[in-house]
Image (cartoon, rainbow, N blue to C red; front, side, top):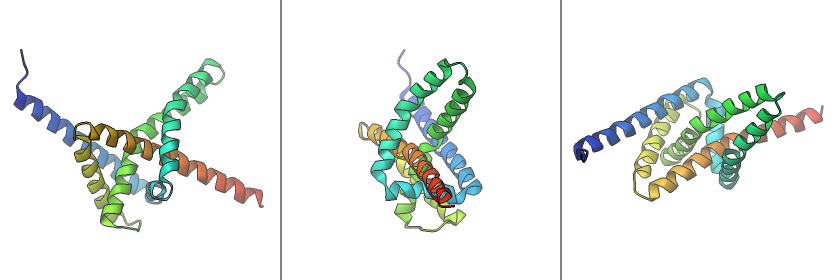
Length: 171
């Protein structure tokens, strides 16, 4: 029996609305808990888009392999679990940073004020959601948004670690 088209569309719309609301809620929590870090990661996409994209691709493809190799060593099982959990968090929130970056560009906000960034985040999430439902184009938008966000997390935090190391070595 062929499914009812109205039911199919209702399910698609409900799924889309759920994704938007879940992303918005998670993004708002991130903006509230760590406003400077959230904005810094989003701005990293603006400052170094190719580094963010490349880092996202590399991190997404290589981290599972590294986790398995660490896990196989037996002694590294606790580390593998921690790295695996951090990987899961990065995958979960990656696209939210891309949405924040996109929204901040569209509304031209520069500051760290919660309300400004919350509005920018909401706009970015909706714009990405609309773009992702376009046949064929949506797939590529989703992939690029994901890799940019995950890569910005990795590249920004790697740069911060390098900056900390350099400043400590001068002491």
